[in-house]
Length: 374
Image (cartoon, rainbow, N blue to C red; front, top):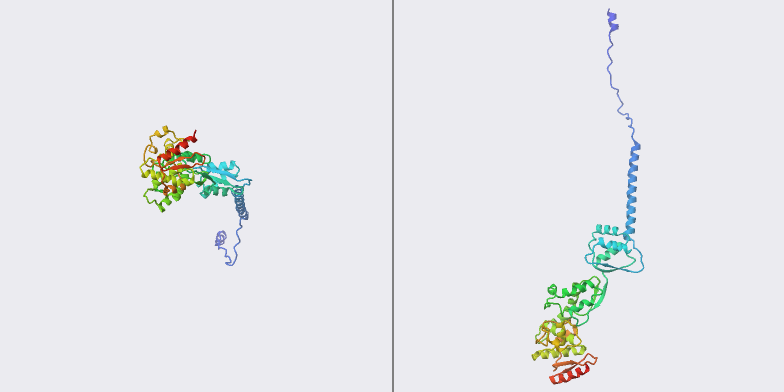
């Protein structure tokens, strides 16, 4: 029984002991995924090459569209109107063949913050200028300029006519600006009267194509300041006449004198008549009152009721009757010391006058003048 029990008994299980490993042994490496890494680097390299290619193409295009000049044989004038914008001007430049791409120039200007810096005027674009250089020129204000000559003795209402061909906008604006002397009184305190008549100094001026009436008038007033106002300040007349009185007399001299040597003599005649309380009886003042350039003054013309009519009212007229030059201003500042009270034109083609001291002498000279008209 004992043996059977022993045979039929279940053997005791052997405990599982974990396998001991040598601490110095190297663990086997986990296999990597080399194909995925290589594939990722391929993508990075491809994207980089694409970006470099794109940058290269953009750089080449930028150079072609912005920095490379379009060659043409003759310089081309470009007019930038006042209030012009690059969005409107650039397509005109492209149409003229001065730039290859209006869009590229506009984008470049926007990035450079130079798209709103155009200066009005006329520019001369040469065939060696790139679009970027053209833009810089149009933003610089270095415009083309032309000479305009305003003759002595013109009325303010006539000056616009000398501007009409090359400065039509200025010519249209001129009459209105002439009636607004307050625009310039802060800068030129010598201005008197309700208009700029007398102050628009006759001279030759270098004027940019896009100049307006205000800029041209300012240039004329600056010249007047140098040639008349400063001359008066440096050597005012000893008889106490004001600057405005000298200017009015200068305008009478300018309108009447045709021979330069007679300017101070005519000024002396007017000063003598003023001293005696005689009316000046200046024909040119009557023409100015009528605003008509007549070849002869008739008796009916003398009837006009105007403060500029020196046949009707004594003393100097209400203001200058034209815009005198420096020589006439100098003559009015320093009239000749002469005994004459009268003068009449010789009418012999010389432009000179016969000067007289008495009314009898003057009437005799006037008869000779009338005979030449027959």
